[in-house]
Length: 245
Image 1: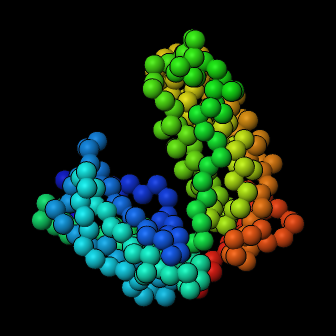
Image 2: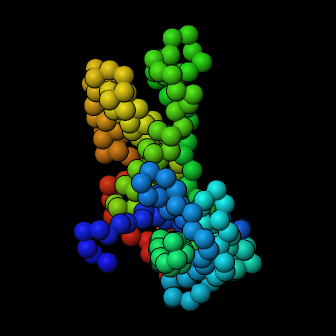
């Protein structure tokens, strides 16, 4: 349908689906429309490997208005080689229609997690601490900003040709993560609290750009869980490691 009355539902995939070998993988497909979750009445989820072979398939479970599916550890055993080029397909029934949503995926040894957290933000700007003496905001926490900044960083790594799950030095990303998070915080504060916060947002964005330009990290070239060489990889480089197992 492409007429003027056509409506679209968004599948909110923040990152590719990374499934760790020999562990149950919990997948989800949140659907959004008009600012609210859209709950499918039923559906199926199918995981394909890079050879387009079905690895796992079955009926979804709708929990909290979101379709979820678990890939059993037995379907992705440790005997399989880590590989990109996988995909997850969701065939979900919404208002009587079956809609298909796809997300890229990979079979990995481990997932890259952030090294920065809220205490790191408070060490830079004490006024951000909601439990401090003079907080400059009324939010209970700042985790959403940290999460969004991390998703943006993962996207940058992927777009530069670096697969996040092959980065074995998460602390190298800490400075960039903190600066980008602070930039997002003050960008938001400039629209909600005071326009003067825009100056701080720009300052931290500049710091992020500088940190990103100089970023180097250890990388698992051979996909064995260890740094592949003494040479570090640039965040702005192009290292397409597309093993297809």
